[in-house]
Length: 330
Image (tube, rainbow, N blue to C red; front, side):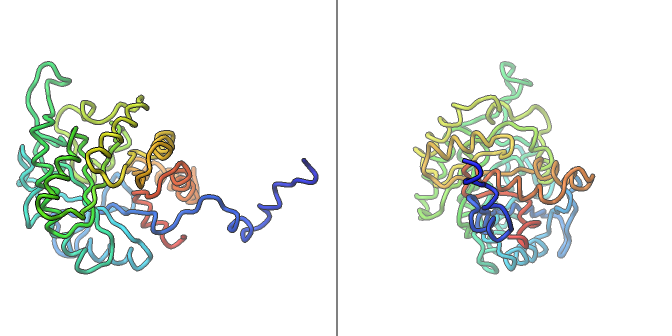
């Protein structure tokens, strides 16, 4: 009781605040998402208009940037690829090419850095229609468009296999097709890649916070939306079921995406499961905060505060474009 108990004793200067801090953000907690674009020439990078200070990279420019981040203390990176537009088709053929942009990036990252290399496994950047699976017309579905689940699984598994062959450490299926973790695990095991981890986008909501990423990765659906396969933002219990299923199929990590608008879900998953938990602080979160900083509505302290809130909710790892901004401050 006051005046014997004074909470401010533990706040009086930065040294004391540092030693009593309950949740700490470390460099190894961060995973940086990087975008490699096939048709960029050597040394080129292309500004992402919806994501301030972020770029699509040519292969060599992206590798050099990854090395710079590693020198600053980054431990992990997740790779996204953007093939030439004229190569895209209805079955995402560029996603499985041995000389595809992601496969090349994985191989160079593994040979030229010591980063943990994670690869996004999804068809959307590689399909002509921009959906995360194969499509079929169906008048009973929203927008008369059906994204086919079972028919997409083998394509996703073959994509993951091509990443494993290129040397990836962890594959991260983000498509939200039912059963994809199990099929990927089976194909990897059958091809002697038993030690490749699966970081499943287990709880991925159909969110408006993805819009800048769709610009960054050139993966916006040509028609319809992704609500028939990504989760309804109103649902909580469904998150538990998705995690249980992925664990049963062999997932090594669980993920909640987006992060800031779903801190309650991060906490729920953390309290119910023992796997390493990843939260994806998505492009919309990044762009929203960066725009507010540019306008003078927020200071750059908001970056660290937002990431700490995700860590405090229970995430072990955070995928975030802010990693490039904040490594020097950790």
